[in-house]
Image 1 (cartoon, rainbow, N blue to C red):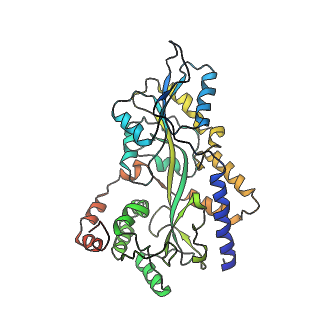
Image 2 (image 1 turned 90 degrees about the vertical axis):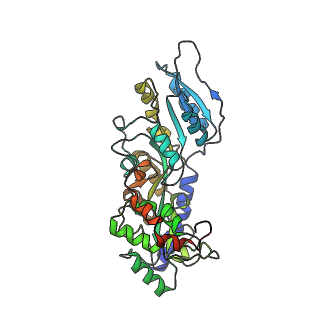
Image 3 (image 1 turned 180 degrees about the vertical axis):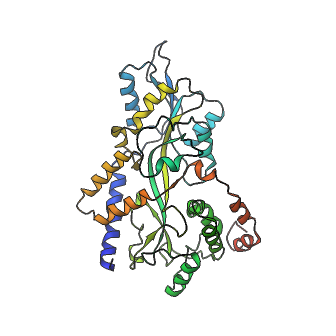
Length: 375
């Protein structure tokens, strides 16, 4: 792909997907910590639905469901934040089900707390999810938190269309091009626990050791700008399936992912829903919650919809925009279909002894001394 075509593709990606991810849904506004019942009567026996940052379409979904006269109507209980909901659950909140935003990042203890409080729904899920999302969200054969929508994050190599075979080769290519390997303020800790964490978890021992060793060669360069010449850059779907403002930095092409890792990126789930362990009627709760994977509500997803059918519909809308190039759609599909990890407890359920051994090593301690608050 020549420089002109590559620049056009990058620009189209950034413009089109930005429109795609901001115009096709409603950002849930902050809610109230007080309960908001939608059905009354002594015999209602409602299912309590705990919702964080509830928006009008969620309240409308509850109203429509209750209007049909179910045996167990639904009562909304609103919370101001994710942490507020989790704190109340730990304090013994009596609720049957939930819909909430979740913590960003791969290794979140808060997400684990919600997972532990939820019932396994793997046997109830019949709606196909996008890409490998169902497998990525599962842990030990269980799927306790169902995704409603998601974004994608990935590392991108910007010195050619082929990934280097190793980080040592990547460093050699950078030296020859007068480029840096990583952004100058990314410390060894932030590289391992941040952007590269999903790649480390999805890599074999040799590739993982190669990555960890390369992090220790990172020098602290606080004067680096985000657009300075470094070769592993970040990509996020909400900013476009392009290179997030790096159009002019990839004249020779780019490649998603990291050599030796089985995933191209990470599904960053934005909102999840599920049934709490204390629910007294899981069948009735699922009867209501299943509508969140239906076409009507999935079409309202702020980010990328989780169901495979809704995602196809969203991509079709994207393809109908005149400025969309075929490369944009292909790039999006490649990322979605070849990502295998998500910000779920599945990433933390594996044996991570290699990570603690690395952070306790003399080599890590020495390399971290030049970074603020890491020495």
